[in-house]
Image (cartoon, rainbow, N blue to C red; front, side, top):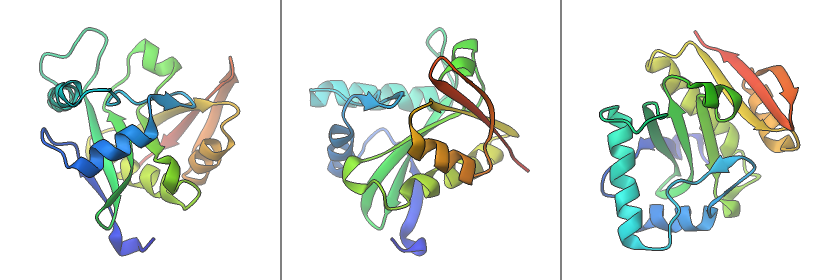
Length: 170
């Protein structure tokens, strides 16, 4: 991994086959991360892309949803993970989900991409006017806890097998 080859790119209505491949490798989700783009059919996948483009704009949000932007993390031309940045919180997101959620594809874990992803998403959060970021993770997810703490996360609460961290920006 070269620092110069790492970049974030926002989700677009039309995505490359490599993104779909990564989504399928990630699967439906784990450790509290829900892979909302995972689906069995190409048609359903394209519908989910379109829905998430709309959610990123913030227009006509479904009940209980907030504006959320999805970003792909690339190393060179290879997508290695993705993250969700929410610009506000509902009561449900205050309990689980927070402002940021991210996942690294299984074949690329343990290479430092999680830290790079979170750092890049924190920059985007600050650009988007979020000054204090909430992250949640499963209590037993030591890798995520280490990444969050390494990026300045302060543990506020650990209950119901879930941890809540806050990171102050700016």
